[in-house]
Structures are given as C-alpha cells and as structure tokens.
Length: 411
Ligand code: HEM
Image (cartoon, rainbow, N blue to C red; front, side, top):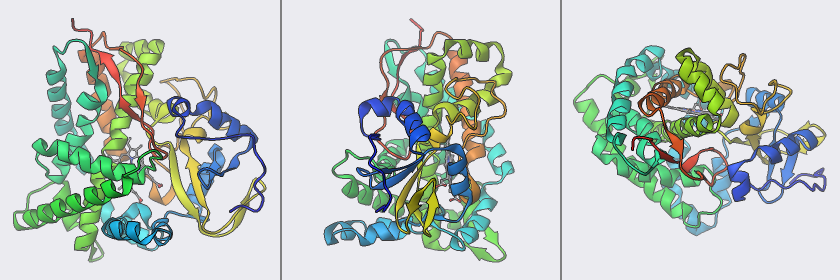
C-alpha cells in the first residue's frame, strides 16, 4: 500500500464498458495529471507515460515473478485448485526474472529464428486463403473475430505445434479459460475453475504430443523446441510442456486482436483505408500503426522488486504495477499528434511488443500474420463494412474484440 497516495478524483475502471470501448480519454487524464496513479479498486499502480513505461521495462526495479506472492495469498480451496496451473506457469519464461529468464531465453531463441518464421509464410498464406474462401458468399452479418481473426493465428500456432486443425474448438476453449485467469478478467466468477481445467487438459495433451514427436521426429517448431540447446542445456520435460502452453496462449489471442483491431480501425478511418488500398507498400506501416494506435496490449503486469520513487510516488517492494502500454503509445511526448491514426507514421516507437529482456519472441511471426491476413481480407472483400457496435474484451492485459460484426458486401 502506498504511503503517499494522493486523494485523486481520477478513477480508472477498466471494467466499465465505456472505458473498454475507449480507454484513451481516461488514460490521457492519468498521463497528464497523475502519471503514477494508485488505483484503490485494482490495488495497483497505473503508470502511463511512454518514458516511464519504457524505462521500467528496461530496468530491474520491477519483477515479472508475481505468481508465488499471489499463490501464497489464496485461501486453501483456491490454492488447491490452482496448484497444477501455478506449477506450469511458474516455468513460463514470461514469469521468470534473471538468471532463470536468461537461461530460458537463450534456449528458446533457437526455435524463434527469422529463418524458422520465414518458413511459415507459405503456410500462413494458405490458411488465410482457405478461410477467405470459406467466408466468400456469406450473406448478412458475419462476426469477423470468430470466423477469421481468431482462426488465422489459431491454425498457424496449431500447425507449429502439430495440433490437428479439427481440434480448434478445444484449443480455443483451453486458451480462453487460461486467458480469463491471466488476462485479469474482472467480471468472471468461475475464472479459477476454468483456468485449472484448461491447464490440466493442455498439459495432458502436450505431454502426449512431445512423446509422439520424440518417437517420430519431424522438422518444425515443436521439434526445434525439443532440440533447442544452449551450451548443452535444454528445456526439461515440464519446461517443454509449459512452453508449449505459453506459445499456444501467447501467439494466439494477441494476434487475433491485432487482426481484428486492424480491421476495425481501418473501417473507422476510411481515408487511411483508401490510402492503403492505393498503396500496398504501406502495409508494414499500417501494421505498426495499428499496434500503436489500438494494439493488442493494454497493460503489462509487474511487481515492485525494490523500493523506489517515481514522480514523487513511493513504490514499495511487492506492490503491483500495471505498465499501461495503451497509454504510453498515445503519449504526446513520444508521438506527434498521437490520437491520429496515420499508416505512414515514421518513426513509430510503440511499446506493444514490450521492451527489454522480455520483449516478445513472436513479434516477427505476429507481424507476418498481420501483413498477410489484413490486406488479403481487404482485397477479397472491397466493400467490407461495419455492421454494428463491436464488443470489447473484459480484460486488463490484452486489448481486443470478442465480436466484430461486418458485412462482406457480396450481396
Ligand atoms: C500481435 C501479437 C503479439 C503481441 C502484441 C505480443 C506481445 C507481447 C508482449 C508485450 C510481451 C512481453 C510481456 C512482458 O514484458 O511482460 C510478449 C512476450 C512474449 N511473446 Fe508475444 N505477442 C504477440 C504474439 C506472439 C506470438 C505469435 C508468439 C509465439 C508464437 C509470442 C510469444 C511470446 C513469448 C514466448 C513471450 C515471452 C518472452 C519473454 O518473457 O522473454 N508472442 N509478447
């Protein structure tokens, strides 16, 4: 608890539907008036300026290892329920500080090389083309999240991990169950039960997959992960299972949100959409600008590792901190005219893939999926249009849509 928290009239309530739909006005007020804000309802610090977010992610005053503190604070019934999930999550690179993080990252980078990602390109193109074929001819309103944005990264990651495509509904359920827990949904009552079930099912599945792949080696990401070595060191069996769960999870919802947020933002900015259609060379800039303007990362979560002051506020060891990427990405100190969506923006130093030692390992893949999927959709359906209000995800960490109603314009 902060000793110096000022009584603030400012209230940041991420579960308020108006804030979910448009968090930027309240985040702008925080950024200007109280850049290190104590949110009593969240029992957390909310950091909103670009330089602070960047410096905190680059420095070592915050830790990602927030699981054990949380676990120890649980009542026995919940602790029992979450024992398995905590065991695996605790092995996630995303929740480890150095030196464990350094070791895991050194091993894992061997499976995330540019060559490995580039090899996935034809597969991504095939997945996108197949999904667009399935959409073609659909009349009336289509939910672009369910029928497109969700399936592109799901199939890509399932191909990478060797999961048969007909299991996509299971994968989605596992992933949603885990996301409800990790993403910090505030309105979900049964989130612990669901997370525990999702984790148990995924762990069982991946144990089987890894054993099968070892017995019948085949080139690809899963084999690369099994074989990844750094100076003779490799992932243990539990670490392999944990990493498969992480990759399935990390590479899936985030990229869905990139694709859906991109389509929504472009449809709401017809001039920029026309600019993109006229000059496909702007595709890379468009993806970067979507990542900045309304990207898939709302916040990153940390705990204070050592006491320190920031803008006169005293952050104490163990305090929780939400590092607000959405707010940093609209900071006028870092971007000209930050509330303008400009697909030609350059430079564009958004923080959507994080910063520092935990910077996203899958950024190259995510960008590639966005670059292929969004233009292909726009090209196939030149009269694509919004068909109602989108529904936003109730979550603190990711930022994305659960529903994006559109018409394809084919009738
Ligand atoms: C647009 C899509 C994506 C976004 C916005 C995104 C964002 C992020 C962010 C912000 C982090 C840092 C988290 C932190 O510092 O706490 C991260 C880490 C990570 N991401 Fe992504 N990600 C995306 C796609 C992917 C994909 C496709 C994969 C894998 C196939 C992936 C794998 C990872 C992994 C393994 C880490 C942990 C790295 C570490 O802790 O050292 N991500 N991602």
